[in-house]
Every structure is written in structure tokens, then in C-alpha cells.
Image 1 (cartoon, each protein chain N blue to C red):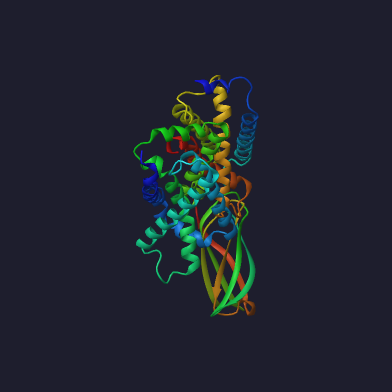
Image 2: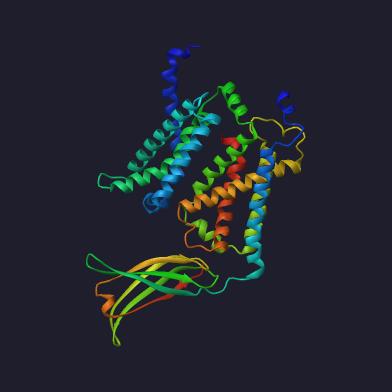
Length: 133
Length: 277
């Protein structure tokens, strides 16, 4: 095999470069996961906090943007978000959204529709439940 | 040989094969629900960047295993364009047959749908010659010899991992599997991916070579092929996840977790690239 001869001898620079880059990538992946493995032994219960964003007007009502922040490292799937408009102690309107999942220490955003103006009532948005992945 | 007079006929035959290849490689994703909306939900600039990069992968791929033997960059460009054209036509036909594209479908929806589907289909169109043709082993050896250089080998690994990662990435399961796994599972998956990649590279051998290069022991083969191969698989996985927006809102650990999950099929794609291409 004549072509094989050219490969003998010194290792080409590209091979060094590729091997070192690959090794660095793998080591950093192992480092990140390994640190997590040692530090956080088990996933805790997800803790979902809701941050209400901009309130906008749509065709026949209003939309309230929200962001669900997971403050624990356990992931929540099928998260139910409930928004209520209260006037004094009486319920004006209720709206519900379902979010596919909020990863541990991650965030997912969505929106709730209302027919009454949320700015003129007391708005409460909270997560009412989730499913374990 | 009556090559001159039958050149056009041969090319038409090649296009026909490419169409078949596009459907063969594209069908699993044409029938994946998530893919139908990705054209609209994917960040427009990321999708555009992905389509451009895919085009360049096709250009290089054309040299190594395209649907007709090529010898110049111009030829490769033309073939990559032809592969894209065939892929878009094939994807449009199948999506229309499935009733997913109708006359009243909004422009951005059907264009986006076809754009994402054209990626796997274009791979199929490009590789159809190798997969669906019966012979012409002289040209096969020719192309294999071109892919023999180290850079060529790394490129084949990249193309293979891109194809397999892309086939899995659109599904919800990638993040879901990531959530199910503990960090220890992830570490085991890293080891398993690397080991499997190495076994496949070692068992299948390298493109155009019946045995490993002279003076390459199993350790050096591991460092020079398997380690960069897995590195490529991880980078490709991360890039594909980013393109589909799966990296948004994730913290570092979750990001690395889903990269490792997608890195598993990507690593296998990198290892078997030489069988397919």
C-alpha cells in the first residue's frame, strides 16, 4: 500500500488539533455533569414562581404575558398556570394555560387571555400543579 | 462507452434516483408531527443559517459521494443545488399528498414546512447514487480515495452526526429523556457513546481503507478518530438544539444534559457515516 507510507512518521498537526479539541470538549462535558452529580444528589420538588410581564390588548380582550421560573433543580412537566381577576373578594374572571415543561432552574414563557381588563382588577397568576417527568 | 450522447439520459436517471433517495431519507421526518410546525416556530435567522450551512455540507458531500461523480467545485455547487431542488420537490409532493399543504395554507407556513423537510431529504438526494445505484465501483473507489484524507474523515463524521442528530432533535423526547436521566445516567451515556463510536470506527474501518493506517495502534485510533468524532457529535448536537430553540431558557446543566442525549445518535451517525456515504 503505497499511500500508507506518507502517513508514517510525524503526526500531522491537524490530528493533534482535532484530538486535543475533542478531548477538551469531552472533559468539559464530564466536568459539568460530574459536578452536578456530586453536588445535587437527587432532584428536588420543582418550585415554580410566576413573573407577570406585559399586558396587551388583542382582538376581543386582553393578554397577560407571564414567565414561569423554576427555582429548584427538579423539572416540572404539564404545568398548570391559573390567572384570576379579583374585584374585592369576588371573582371577576379566571383563565388557565398549560405549559409543556419548565426545566430545573430554567424558564418558560406563555400568556393568559382575559375578556375583562386585567389592569382594572386585581390580577393573581400562580402555578396550580405539575406532573413529574 | 457512449458517454457523450447518453450524458443527459444518465443525468436524468441520476435525478430520478435522487428523488427516490430524498423520499427514503426524508420520510421518517415527513411523518413526524413536530416537524410540521418547526418551519414556523423556529427562529427565522437560525433556520436560514442552518439552511446555508446545510448547503455547504452538501457541496462537500457531493465530492465524497454525490449522485454523480464530480471533479470541480462548479460541479459540486451544481449538484448541491440540484440535490436541494429535488429535495424541495420531493418534500412538497409528500406534504401535499398528506394534506398538510393546501391551497389555503399561509405562505410562511408551507414555505417553512418545506424548508425544514428539505434538509434530511437533500441528504437522501445527494447520497442516492451510492445507496440506490447498482454499480460503477470504479467511481466509488475514486470517491472513497478522496475521502481518505484526515480532514475528509472528520467531515464525513460531521455529516453523519448532523443527519442523525437532525432526525432525532425535533421530537419532544430529547428533552424528556434528558429530564428522566440523573447526572449518573448522563455520565454513563457519555462513556457508552464514546465506546460505541470507537467500536464502530474500529469494526467498520475508515473510508476507503481495508485496515487501519500503518502505525496506528488502538490507542492512537481512539485519540485521533473516536475522541474528535465524539467532540464533533457533541458540537453538532448543541448546534442543532440551538437551531430548534431547545437551548433557550435552559441552565448549563440541562443544556449539557440534552446535548449528551442527542450526542448519542449523533455519535452513532458519525461512526456509520462511512457505510452510508
